Image 1: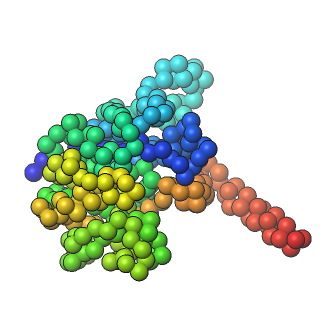
Image 2: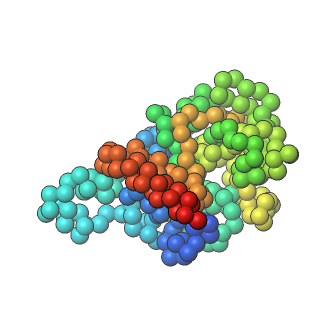
Image 3: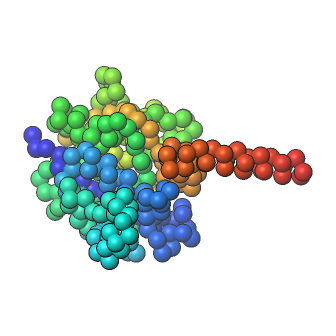
Length: 296
């Protein structure tokens, strides 16, 4: 069994939910306090033992490459001013190599993963989606890698969600469960609440075998007219048993405005730099808002 050393981070989406901000800025570069969202994803991969990351980008995503590149002029400026803590934050990590490939047109997540096939070769690999930040003692993708090392089979990260949210996610129907581990019977992409086979939702973390690439190559478009990774994993499940694992830790959905706002506030409340100031600010804003409501 080969070790999971490579990861794909798809970052080619148009970010339409965040327009007009994403007209000229990649959605993945929108900051949570002072760190772009993609920074958290790369950090999780690094902490999980990943050695090579390929980021699948699209038109107008050059800022992602610049962010992970060295900036000699800025680094020299920080050194001269003695701002060593900031210098440490912006210096690229030497523990992981980051590569890039462009998805020529937005054809869906499945196609974005397929674009990285030559980089991955004949190895198992991880996929981390930028819409999900997982904060846990053991990084989210590391939890899946640990399970893969026991099972030697593809595995996807899942969490329980409220039944009314099933239309937003790929949903897992399982036929066997052992603790947090489920054997997958089938996956259903964004089912209506009444048709959902469960409330186990795919959380944007996967460890897959390279057999998925042959399936993605001739995968027909699915929901939204795009090549869906979920559909290819369903077909993969006919060739090898696919598993789902309920991730431990807190998952933050930064793929929509409300989730992004909630994540920002949550991270700010935990940030020692602010030392209770955020709590006080929120109280003041709520009091101000409620006083306006009373006047109305």
